[in-house]
Length: 385
Image 1 (spheres, one colour):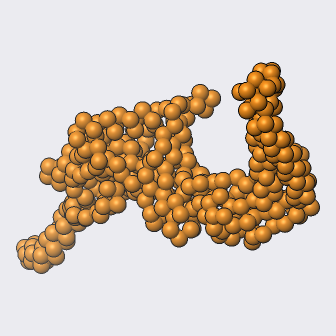
Image 2: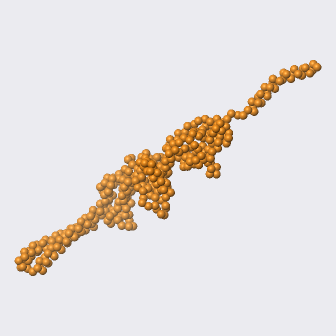
Image 3: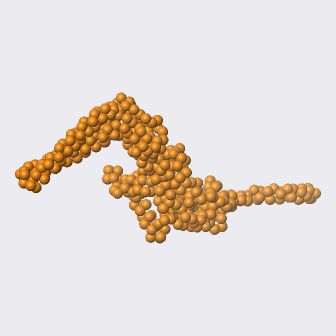
């Protein structure tokens, strides 16, 4: 009996420790707290959709400098690559053959003037005699004809002299505009003005304003036209004239915006593209003809667009989805339809509503139907507009 009582007393002594161990085991089997995830709240905003086009820079005026007469190049009177003024002497060609031609034409003019003087004197002598019937009518007609022919001969000689002087003037070549001049394509002593020797000696470009030419496809043109038509119908044509951006070769954005000033008449049937010309101010002279650059233009404006960071979106075999925190803070994997990318964002066309919470950070911690602890996060997507 004493042994039984002793065993019972020992059992009661061990019971508290066993209870403590049991409580600990129950605590260990409790579910872990919901994982913390960062979420963003979708909102509606005006979204500008851009497209980029590869273009080439030209001077506002690119004037080719040509030798308009044949001859040997005698002098170059400027520094290559420098800024020059309109009327600056650029080149001189040998002038002796043209000076000789001018002298010969001047002699012809003198002969014509002498012949005219004799014809005029002869007519002045015969005309009064013809009035008195002292000479025949045929003599008077002959004198008038000689006078008229002498007048015509003098005019022809003077016209030939003028043409010869013009040819002589072509031996000195002046700049037609203010601008930047390039490298001469000939050397002193070269015979110019006729192939195979250089016909175009140089080019002068006015670059206070530059032209950028680029091409768009037929589908891009139709998309742009419909966008402009929609804006016109809404009375927003002026607002839709967004300034163009110019992206330089080093990735920087040119500080001055541009505008479209020319759309070609037709689409090139061989390439299926349409030529567009835009102009950009260039007060510092940084842009030079021949540069390649990208023109960034607004092609559409979505009034109530929803933008979601690309990191929120997963893609599997062409299907896109996001994790949305729904009722009870439970995850709902939502299929979406995406539009174009705008910087680091994606325009959502279908699948999301304004005010829904999309998982931004912690995608690896969640799956469909799991409860989470959402933490709000704000995204600055002002760059998209």
